[in-house]
Image 1 (cartoon, helix red, strand yellow):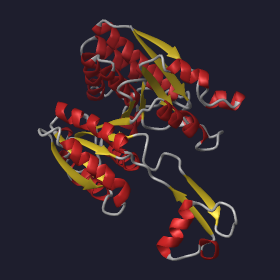
Image 2 (cartoon, rainbow, N blue to C red):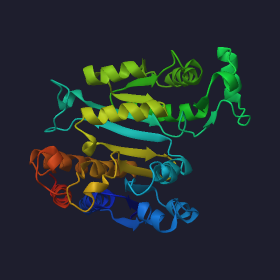
Image 3 (cartoon, one colour):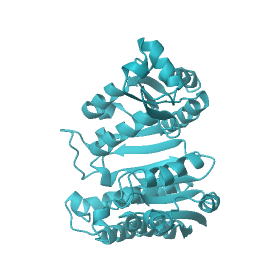
Length: 372
């Protein structure tokens, strides 16, 4: 028996999570395990009703679950950023979900915008550091002529450029990126371990040629960690170069490890080369605690309740969840069932089919039960 928390969230979130639950329950039937689901009312509706985002009671309850199955957050009635920061990012930081896991894989029968590339050419994983870098929330913005807000950033700017911000700049904003040795080490270790289970190649992404202090540390830790994994072939790529090679030669990559901000960017590129956001799952992982699995697309509120949303990314995220809790055969069966639904044409409109969210989810669940 596995206790798993479910947060449908906003927009199409509840519908796609329901489809995913159906598939994971089918996997349990076939592979002899049960899932005890607990639904949490967290999202825009609750926030609009009583201004609650993520409460201490929520966090206290969620820590009792090894995994959280998450739908989507975002609602046009709420100012952008409030729900995302107050719920999604708050969960990531509270539970120290320091690994963001993104498989970039082209499934058979799906078209990629990359000419001539086939499923065997696009099959790699991006491991994104998920709690540091420029997302730690250290920054500010102030008017240059104000007498308040004299910060270290202003003084550093004055020294660097020989200017007096109060007289030479009308306004200034700054954001500080933070990389710690421990933060880099633990996510890179996760990536090396993953590379050992795959094709034993690991690419590190950074921008150390320009941001040499913050990403110089990232490189140093990578080189040190690599000494413990002599079987793994390693390489460094600058983030601008890696975006070119993702498009030109995706077959070069096996596992890619990246700081937070660059990972945020290149995984969206990865989603497009694997066929679109409707096919892109993600895991937010703490190997020693609660982890969270979700599609990387948004809440698409205009499609809420219309039974048209593609559930594949969410179901694939469910496969990642099963793999995380140790049900590896079940995880593989879910992914095989997704591939069969694509081959059979039982897919939603965005993939050229006419199935609704419920029908697509039910078909994939039946494929799991029947072993393909």
